[in-house]
Amino acid sequence: MISLQAAGHRPRRYGFALTPLADAMFQLLIFFMLSSTLSPYSLISLTGGAPAGQSAITGQADAQAPTPIANDALVVWHLSRGQIRAGDQSLPLADLASVIPALLGEKVADVLIFPTRSAAVQDIATVLEALGSNGVTKVRLVSGSQAEGG
Amino acid sequence: MRAARLAPSRPRRQPDFSLAIVNIVLLLVFFFLITGSLVQQGETSVNLAETSDLPLERLPRPLLLIDKQGDMALDGQPISADEVAGQLGPDMPEALYVLADSKLSADRLMALTTRPDLAGVSMRLVTLHIRPERAP
Image: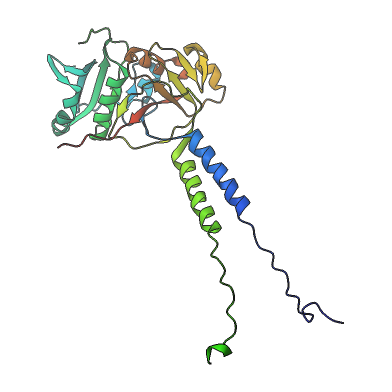
């Protein structure tokens, strides 16, 4: 018997065609490039034992809120459009980060924020970001403030 | 001549770059899968509040969009505040991600967070991460 090899035939080599695979990959790539958005988002917790914000004066939130310690200082802020008011002092939100180290130095453990009627979502985000990123973890947002704000 | 004794040289095979291309494209696909979020058109059509110091996060579901007038849409479907809890179903999700317009009144947002029917749901405000301005 004469084998093929003996007759001089080389065994046929089957190549693996990568072009269809590359095509499919490109289709997937184009799909994901067009349909997805790169995530430039951040999240701020508003409820549910949130580290940077906790609402509000409902029964639920009160149950979740830790009991204030007697010697801990409490700060009450009224939040209005672009500024906060503490007592008779007003401070632009842009300068808030410079005040927080002093608050921490005075061992302020709890910040209570009353958004006034002029306050917007951006103001809440700004104040919660400033407090959270500077290490103030106990922040409570209190709804239903009837105060007029600047 | 010495060169005449050498075996005839085989034709040189052209290097195949297909595998390299597939690898690179696969890496790009993984990149977009990991860093991107699939959103429907118009689902994020509000001007979000801006932050710069918070870490970047993905955009999970369910997404509650609230525009400047207070109109809401849950995952792209228009909805009223009273219907949100019902639409979330009996198995409430752990968190509800709120895309609120930056100019929306804080009172409206606070009213949503204090709704009794959404008491068990943790609400998270989605903000737009912008690069912090560097001091000159």
